[in-house]
Length: 150
Image 1 (spheres, rainbow, N blue to C red):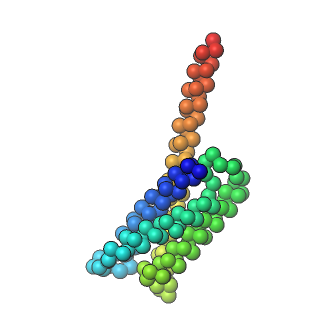
Image 2: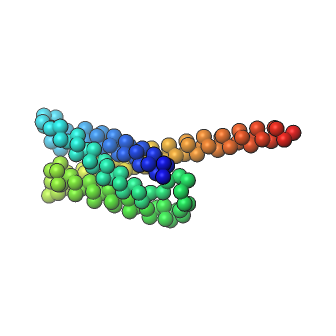
Image 3: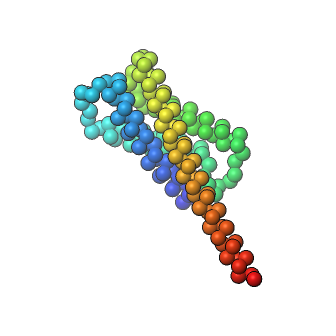
């Protein structure tokens, strides 16, 4: 349970950071540098990050039941579809973009894919480093046990 919570908090931070970064690029590209924004956009970003993070429940957490590669790939695809649906629906709802403007819609889909890939890559890198650390500690423990047996 603690691993799941830790995973979800980490995912939230990565998603919120990704959304903030893409927003900083997306707004000037489609609306120009002189657009005045209100503080409510910050709450919208946090809400969107939370809703996108909630879909992370589909993803397995280290230490939980093992899943096959096929199952993992299917979960990632479903999560990607979920994130696309949420971001597009939410973006239209809060009027971040118009669904009728193909350039804005395509820009948003590209932004979603970019953030998804970056978050996924960072998460994979973090998990890989953690696994390497654990393997190193296991090797050290085994070496220590082998040395004490002599």
